[in-house]
Length: 112
Length: 116
Image 1 (tube, one colour):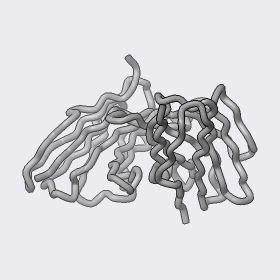
Image 2 (cartoon, rainbow over the protein chains, first blue to last red; image 1 turned 90 degrees about the horizontal axis):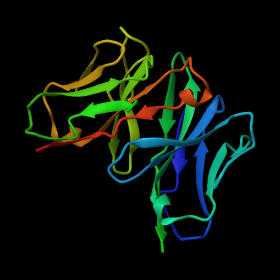
Image 3 (cartoon, rainbow over the protein chains, first blue to last red; image 1 turned 180 degrees about the vertical axis):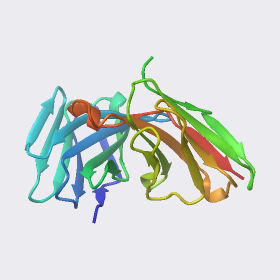
């Protein structure tokens, strides 16, 4: 089956690192994504990782993938108040058609 | 600006009324999707259209119909609105034949629908 699980809430102080975790169940996932949703807005693609990679770094963002444990994490270095948002983990599964399965989202609150 | 445009942004309906949510994309994407977002539920797929001329049910299609009018436009219709359809509706598009980043979706800004 397919299910993507995330913790619902994370609170950090400005300047700290944030780590948002995600687990997925479908080992056939080809790509895994992180989306960001700011209040009142749609989802914006933040970063992605191909399933044969262990790590991807993009400026303040680091994505780690443990395929054996089906665990994905997003680390945000030097977290800013503008990073406050809901972060969604998603997996891309090809099963006759390609679609994305989303987790329920982690709300990140960054306090000054 | 290139992207996905949804109209209206806000709507209040009475139970039993009908309405159509509009979505248009100008990126020449083949696939289009309708999701609903509810608190604590994440995003759930209602319908999708893999290409012009085709539509298929997603996870929660009951109470909805869709039309892929052309490559640009994909509309979602509520024939008889119910309070359980109070939600935020997102349209998205993607081009699976494109480069790796296009495996992700481009989302519209959403339609906030309340059914009373």
